Length: 452
Image (cartoon, rainbow, N blue to C red; front, top):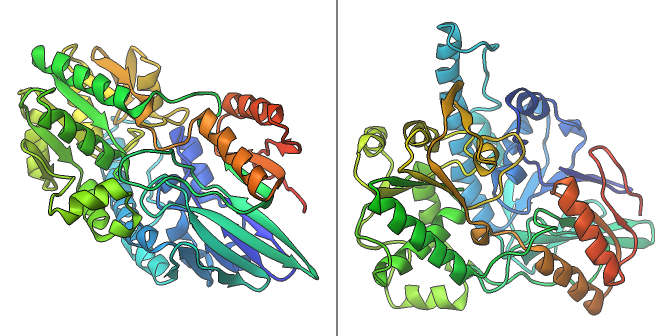
């Protein structure tokens, strides 16, 4: 959540859901750090829950402005935030049942918002294509550039007029990577008086994508040979589709055995349908596949599952298989049921393919804890855990530095604020940017202000 205050209006860049320790998560998400009644507009970079997940709370708390995003982001929010509301309602019912039975020591749980709140939010969403300047609020003008992170993701150029002077705030959102499947490469803004730059992988370089395909193939072969399941917690947006493309390629080359591949996520099924609706966001290779009538999201042995009973049958099935299920950080959704069945058996493998926030179940799996808590119950972890960061849709350190360098070459960068990252990666990235001559780099904490 980035609050931008001008002479005549107040605008929010993104409004995301915090994920971490359950108690802290509830407190931070329920208690917004601003009054929605004071807000004139929201500009949303993309549909991932950590950027959009609190938007449905705003209308009920007095927000009456407009939420601007790209067309693909609006379509994705329609399915993703409805899914988030249904998961919250379902998890609250499940946990409250356990609490009432005395199986979990906790206060009753309430969902942050309902599906009705999502509908009220969608009524305030306006879609704007890439590269078109639009008026956000009095004194504010913006344009979306392609961030190359997920379908519809945008870099935001926000021009703020203050008297006779105009300052440009550039918000990277989540910056994508070059030469990745599905999407175009990130674009370069013309200039920035202040660059709000994500720093998720500010201290790491990503392996080449081809290396990740080979590593995934090896994991599937090894796990299947010992009769186990490969469980892949995936973000329904982008990561699920990229893993499907990777498994499709491995299957066509005969580099993985002929075992079932199950996408057990109603949301991933819906998101994949949204992908089919937006070829305007694809790179040339994927558009060529579609032009030839080939669906990149289907292949032999691949099955999409939405029905609850079918999902339970998949979880109970003892055959070797690959299961993709949400959520990506293992904090909710169907992946928890599969993990509950799989973590205790050494022949299974959990494959982590995305960033895991501190204090999430996904992070504990990355740390290879010997005991993990699933649905409030401590369980022994005997399964293998593999981490494949090369599938990440976030730019690596070299790509973040190159992004800043390219803006400097094109029109200049005044200040840089490193956001959306943990302290160690941010400090490392700060050093790397200083080394290329960038000055005025700050690492703001929550509540800090920067005046232009």
